[in-house]
Image 1 (cartoon, helix red, strand yellow):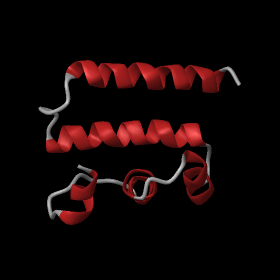
Image 2 (cartoon, one colour):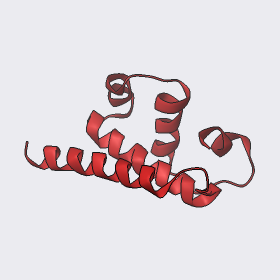
Image 3 (spheres, helix red, strand yellow):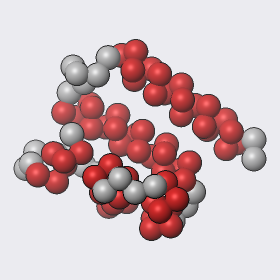
Image 4 (tube, rainbow, N blue to C red):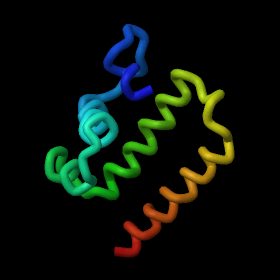
Length: 88
C-alpha cells in the first residue's frame, strides 16, 4: 500500500510529512532515531503518526487483507504508547 501512494494515480490525500514518513521508515527502513532526526519531533510521535497513516491507507485501498483483530491489536499498542507519553 505504501508503494501505491507513489506509483498510482488514485491515492489518498496525505500531507508532505506523512509522505516523508512513509519514505523514511517504510520504504527505506530507517530507524526511528533517524526518522526523528530527519523529520523533527519525537520517535513516539512518528510511531503514532505512522499508525494513523496506515489506517488511512487501509480505509482508502481496502482492509480485506487485514483482520479486525490485527487492527484492534495495533490500536491497543499505540494507546499504551500514548499513555506513556502523557506520564512523562
